Length: 193
Length: 193
DNA sequence: CACATTTAAGATCAATCGATCTTAAATGTA
DNA sequence: TACATTTAAGATCGATTGATCTTAAATGTG
Image 1 (cartoon, rainbow over the protein chains, first blue to last red):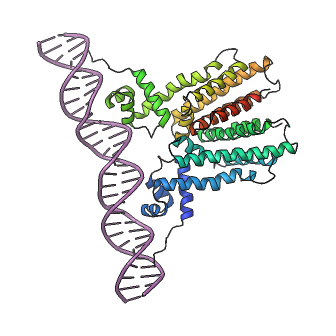
Image 2: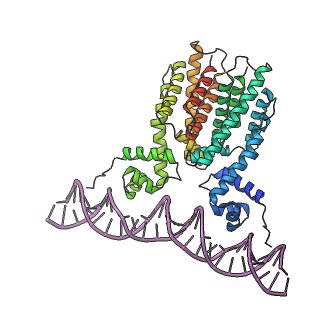
């Protein structure tokens, strides 16, 4: 009854996400997206509505795919100190192999849009809070297991750790050295002893 | 011999700086700048070259004026723990009165331009390093004066503190609560004990 | 096999961008 | 006072933006 779509929507969204991640929203033109995805202008608009819809879909995909890749380790019932250290190992590794040199897409989006779009702001602040809560849970388990200082102010340290991770994202995007990133991670983990 | 300029260059640059600080480079149009400064298009171009020249002059002014307002306390020969705490008090106060709700202009610039402009990248990384060094000097004095833990890994903590400050900038721009900012500051200072 | 529908491709739209150019007023010197 | 120069104001430039429209190929049903 109808012609079948020739391109894969998920694959297209993935390519668009990486381009938006690197260049931001305004600096990415629809023509850039057409060239990068190989999908014609009309194809993108029929699948995602408009440029803004495509960007928001890309940010949502980033949360599900990349943020989960970085912090998903914390989403187990008994995640503790080992999982927190694992998160920082992943961050370090993704800086080394280049996948985090463009920073965190949520941090970049927070800076570009500030508070000008409600849906994006909710996505950003919601995911920041989610990270903070996951760190807080893991720290609580770590305290109970005797793996960290027993007088640790858990919630406060969780908030502070999340903030450090956002700061690292800025430094990565600014092109800071791997050695500096390693120092920050060391200092962050030493707080726990 | 020649007609005198009718507008004040410094005052104009100050207005442009605040607009760029809030909206970033690409989202600020030359027409916005004309409206905001009250100076005609041709006046801006004769005084600053082009939009890029005006932006870079604004970033340089930010470094001299705002960054100095925040971190200048550290630029005394015997700055120590009290001065470090003072820096965080200033950051907190500037968040409360709204002056830091748009984040740090250098962080915003780092995110928007990534590494695409050499002069801006040098300004950003240079000022990041300057902050790190100032914190490091003050921490060294604080250790010598017995105001902080004597086994403090000074350089590493200085790098980590600077990273936290960049993370706070992102959170401010994203519209985080004052209470959260206070928690991060508390956790940062508690590391020193 | 015909037909209604949806697709892909790209021409084209008005709007906006940064930048330049034109014009005329203001200035100080000769 | 007359003139060369620099200013301010704004019209206008080509380029680029996101979005729409036109056209024709592809598809599956009746």
